[in-house]
Amino acid sequence: MSTTARTTANAPPSTERYVGRFAPSPTGPLHIGSLIAAVASYLDARANKGHWLLRLEDVDETRCQPAFAHDIVSTLGAFGLHWDGDIVTQSRQKSHYESALATLNEAGHLYGCECSRREVADSGQIGIDGPVYPGTCRRKRLPLDGMAVRFKLGDGKTHFTDRRQGTQSQDLSRAVGDFVIRRRDQLFSYQLAVVVDDYLSNVTDIVRGADLLDSTARQIALQRALGYPTPRYLHFPVAANSDGDKLSKQTLAAPVATGDRLGVLRGVLHFLRQPEVHRAADCQRLLAAAAANWRPEAIPQIRSLVFSGGA
Ligand code: GLU
Image 1 (cartoon, protein in one colour):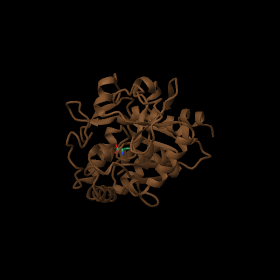
Image 2 (tube, protein in one colour):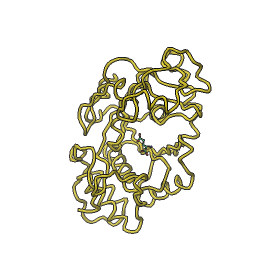
Image 3 (cartoon, helix red, strand yellow):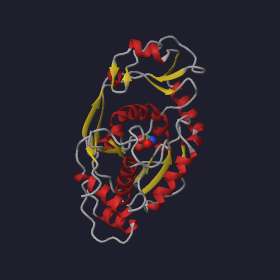
């Protein structure tokens, strides 16, 4: 299947085995925003008779803790969200990121950058993710070792069609500039790790919060440079509190309460505007019924939505 077909198709094709995934970062216990991502990706996978994988995104080891990974895994189990196959842990995938970096370097896509954060902040315009890198080190031919490693962008816009948010187009040079794929301290970036991991796991469908919509064009640029296929994307609105702030670890969203699990799951289904499931004795039955009635087209086409708990 061509890259274009993969990025523009709205419904999963019948010839290909659907592979979806949930990819939390263990920087805190599972909060409601992550549970929504788990449930939405799980239901889309099960409704398409696909696999649903679990990947712990601890690539930024400075922010992740094994105790949180533990909490996430056991909370998913308590909610009846059972994944297929072995859990992938990014901190054990480094050799794969190294070889992707070598491939990109051989093809002339990378360069070393010695700019400090301050220099970038002073020289760049503000883009979607902080200062836009102005390309200061592009032609300096610095070595990659001991430097931040940047991905050299081509000209033009990157287009893709999201299954829920519609046609997207981003001029990466204006919105972010050549971006870092390995930091000076050797940590690989989320953008590279996610692309390599999704490829290695044959992921066909990515269902995640719309806070990552703006990262998608960067990921597609890397997929193209590496010769990987592009998966289909579905970005659902992120859960916000009544002040409109995203519920995340940064805004100290509380860990998901595991007491009334059926009630919490019903709240998630309501948030995703899914048909109500009457009478389910346990979480697994509720999820099975929700998968049988899964209507991705009912998910609101907006980037954030207040999570009100229940119907
Ligand atoms: N690890 C990311 C997060 O927890 C999600 C990455 C993704 O789904 O691509 O926000």
